[in-house]
Image 1: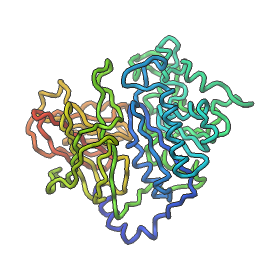
Image 2 (image 1 turned 45 degrees about the vertical axis):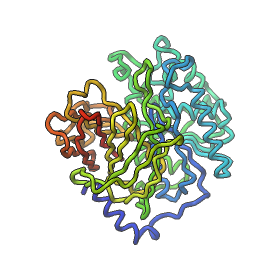
Image 3 (image 1 turned 90 degrees about the vertical axis):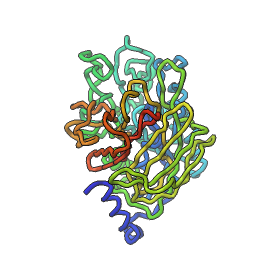
Image 4 (image 1 turned 90 degrees about the horizontal axis):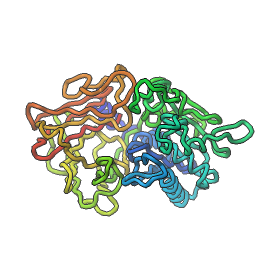
Length: 455
């Protein structure tokens, strides 16, 4: 049974069973602040937040932040357009924590960070006052000892384990020489060998055959509870159901269910953002509101991707960047369409939303010159993980695996199809049971298509 059919069945049963099966939300639980990774958005935490809610966490005590410029600088100490420093990141996190503490009345919060988000958490606890405001800190896939540890290779980069930022954070603390700041309960979650940023060989930093001086154990920290989840990739260290289960038990002291309980009423919202311009690094992603853009929502046929009727929701994006609220059918599939000056018309197809979320963030894209010869350009995107072969079952337009997805360590989170035959036709995609069908909108009309997975 496909994920779409399972969600539809689950939602039909929810009205009768929700009251009996769901754990009542509790304000006793501490607030959790989720910190995304390099180049990412708050939206990656959607399924994790759904699982916390399904285990009784009150929605208003779950807060995912959006760093305006989520990409790290090449050299942390040098200004760089469209990028943020470790100090920028720490200060933003500190401000967000204070907002959450004020809104909830809680003395302390839990911090849960993926990848670079863990750097900000460690920096905030060690140097920004977080030791007094944080009870638990969970670091998923954070390169705590660097992606590389070579003094001569870009020593000012925050991901260099031999650079000043990580050397200072990892300096021995307390009588046992721990690497974590005392006073906070720490957990790290890592892969056994499938994290592309914890590899002994430099292939993923463009230096194949050169030792990185970092091992598979790089994300682990002395003094923390260090968890290993075999086979998971870099992003799955935070967003995988198993990572959620470990985090929940670490915070709550008891096991959790990883099932997502459907809601009878689903309300969606989130931010529309775009890409940077006129910088030497290309079109960097940012999390700034794309003011003036227009967002439309259409219900689609899950079998063909065709629109079912007219737009159900339409909004011009204002200064807050938010495109909703939109009351959705938790069993339905939808197409989100962004139009904005300087961008391609961006068609985003999504599988059903079983629960409400205010971090359904959407990003406008551009049609790159190399793709303008195609009839249509369709990208299968997996924001919460990478594609790993032969572990995963992946197909795009009937091709399994899609072109550009390598075997071995999970290192790509998207697969692009340049349609060469006909526009307007259905393009199906599947990933480990989750199925999405979109339409091949014509590139000649400056349109791009994304099939975005929850899984």
